[in-house]
Each structure stands twice: as structure tokens, then as C-alpha cells.
Length: 283
Length: 290
Image (cartoon, rainbow over all chains, first blue to last red; front, side):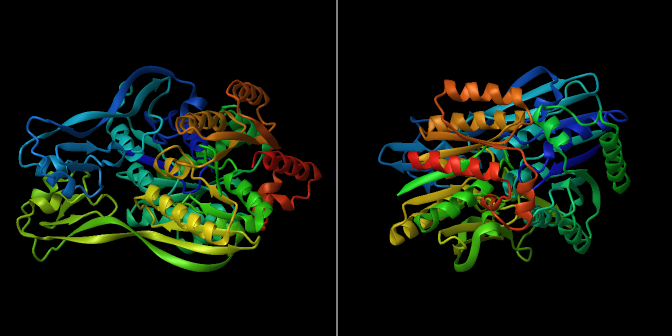
């Protein structure tokens, strides 16, 4: 099983475009499961239009108080590093948005007054079509813990594809903890960028993360133009291969805006095939 | 002092580009805040000099002292974040996975776990090419506490704003609708939503609007990159109308913005008179609201 992540520091560089098109191309020769880990804004199925066949709720565990046992000693509150618990005279309150579900309060409670209860993060949906399966996480509105949901989505096995050969992760944008969670355990990271000062700046931060995680990686330049040298120079100095270039064309922007795949156009189809070959060669 | 946030749900919709436009137009009346702390780009367009730099320290990280560790594994069993692992009979903690909860310290009988204040990043105050001020940050790569860092730089911007008697705090929001976005949105007076006019951009904008509604934030919308999916656009306009969200401008898809960005110029420096006129129209509409 090969796990490939599609990530980028900057948002809107084309992660999802690449993930859905690449998933379809890879599916022509291997059994693929695509995971939409951009749980705050999952968009893969806007393009793939697959059929949902199952949906489950994703919960995390947060402390629940048994009032009969609590002595209001305040140890849980003192030990919580996230200031998620307030205890005063006969008063206990948990602020779920601050809770990291670490379980420390439960471990340290001397009177066994804390247990765990489920707290809803969002939904995990399973979709299928003739060639692949999609597992999608969707964070509930006004929930903070996207990282925890990403962790849960990655733990879910596909339900239709038996023994998948390739897993593709469409990662969240940015360079903070959600993307680290998404990148954990992958064999290869494809970093999508655009040839602009913004693209370069955010790519350089992403590379610091992938380096720290010791991941094999390559770069795809989207909206490729005559300014590509800004990315090419960086990649040369950093020793990172450029796997593919997607040209900056109105035609592609239109297809993406309509939720269409680009693999039907021969030029892009062969570009995607080359990209796939390039990645598998590196593994 | 009014706090205005520019957000979009989707990344790459044009938040920073439009924020730079407002930064120019509001000039010394504004303190700008780049709340996209893990991929901050506004400074690349507007920063002149970095005036102040501050450490951002939040929470803790646990580190195992291998000299003292006897390898019992109690810490690994209690860690909920899979941050602790064994290598060559010694345990160690993955810095990127550790959330600093301290549960491991409670169970270590050998006091082998050190506890360090977590330096998660830095934040800065800069002046800009346009007489406005900029408060921005750099979260350490892969770092935590982005929401707290956003809160911290918003606090700093407010202090600076009241000192220099600025009329506006202008926040360039992060993508998404999670922790840092909520932190950037909370308590603002106006959301300028930059909606990218494709199916992803529209889908993401609608999720952002759900949050804005929960937080009861007045919202206006600018559509960016219009003309590439006219059907979705007109549906979205209906949606905005139904939800009483004023559409204050539409910027057509154009290749020039990318070129301007590469010359580190703002959209206002466009050579296309139609785009220029559109931006002026948006500014006029905004002045009525502000």
C-alpha cells in the first residue's frame, strides 16, 4: 500500500484539482482510495460527483462529570494545561472548545468523578463510483478541532475497495497542525505551488515540515507561466524534484470552476500520466 | 475603531490581494492584521520596515531525558497523541505530535520528562508602503496554537490602533472555517467575504457564512474571478439575495493579477481600465458601509 499526500502551504494552488484528476488516472491501473482531509472545506466530491453509500458521525472523547463523586478538589483544573476546566466551590465547568481530549483530568481525578463522553466533530462520508472510493471528512460548523477529525478520517478503512494499492490524501491548506496530522505516515508528499512570491514563501515553510517529518517529496507547479524560475531556483537549491507543470490557462480555470475534470483533454491527460509515473518512479 | 475581516473559506480566492487594496486606500486610518499566521503573505506586498518583533510562547512541550529514562513505557501508554515512541530501547517524544498536555509527566516514576515552554512562533509590527501599519506573524512550521496567535496579534493591533487613533483594524483572514478562522472572526464588526466564482469557492463561502451567521457578523460579498462559470454565479447571486447579503462588486477572472503579484504590485496598479473601475466601484460601495 502506497500513501501519497497532496499538500500545499498556500491555499487555492490546486490541491483538490490535482488530487481528483490524479485519483482517476491512477485508478486506471491500481485500486485507489481518495481521502478528502480538507475537513473544513471538503471539495473533492464537487468534482467527482460520486454516490454516497454510507455516512458515520465522528466523535471525540471529552470529560464528563459524575457530580455525586466529585469533591471539587480542583486537581483536574490545576492539571489541565489548556485551561479547559474551571472548578470553584461546588462548581465545575468544562469549556469543550479548549479541551484537547488528552484524558489527563480523568487520570488524575482522585475520586474517580470523571469519565468520558462523546463530543461530535463532524461527519465522515463514503462515496463510490465504478473506479474508486472516496472517504470524506466534514467538520461541523463552529467546531475547532479539525486535526482530531483528520486523525479519525485517516483511521477509517474503505468499505468497497478491497485491499487498496494506493491511498491519496487531499490535505488541508496551510502549515500548522492539521497538515502535520494529514501528512503523518505518508510515503510521498506532492507539494502543489504557484509561481508567485506567495507560492514560494508558503512552499518554503511546507518544505520545513516535510523535512522535519523526513518525507520524500516533489513539487508540482500549477499556473505555470514564464515566472516558473522563482520556484525552479528554490527547488534546485533544496534538491527537490519538479514533478509536473500545469499551465496557467483560462480553459483550466473554467473547467475547475464548473467542477469538471481535466483528464478528458489529451494534453492534460498525458501530463497527469507523466506525473503519476514520476511519483511511482520515486517510490 | 471598527474591525473588518476579509475571509473566503476557500484558499486562493483573493483575500490577501483585496486586503492590500484596502490597506492602500485606508492608509494611516488602518492597522492591518495578517491572521493567516501559518502562511502569511500580506507583508510580501505591503511591508516597508519591521519595527518590532516578539516571541510567541504558548503551552509546553515534553522532552524525555534519555539519561534518566529507564524505558518502562508508562508514558507511551498514557499519551493520546501517539507522540511517544521507542527507538533503540529509549523512548522519545515527537515534537510535532506532542500537544503539551503533561499526562506523561504524571505517570513517569523516574522524573525523566522535562517540560519546556513552547516557542510556537514570532509576531511583528511593521510599517507599510501605504502609511498603514501591519501586525503579522510567523507560526513555526507545523506549529500549534494558531488560533491563540491570531488572538494575540489582534490584541496587539487593537492596542496599536487606539494609540495611533486608527479608525479601522483590517484583518486578512486564514482559509478554512476552523480554529484560526473562528479566532479571526470573533467579535469583528464586518465580514468582507471574497467568494471565488466557481463551485468550490461558492461551496466554501456558504460554509463560512454559516459561521458568520452564528457569530452574528454583518457580511458583504465580493465575487472574484467571475465569468468562468456563469450558471453557478447566478445561482449564488440568488442565494446572496435570499440571505440579504449585499454583493458589492464583481471582479472578472484575469491573468493580470498574477503578473502584478509577481511584480509585488497591488491590484490597484492594474493597466486594465475596466478592472480599475470595478475596484473603484467596490471602494465606493464600501465607504457607504464603513
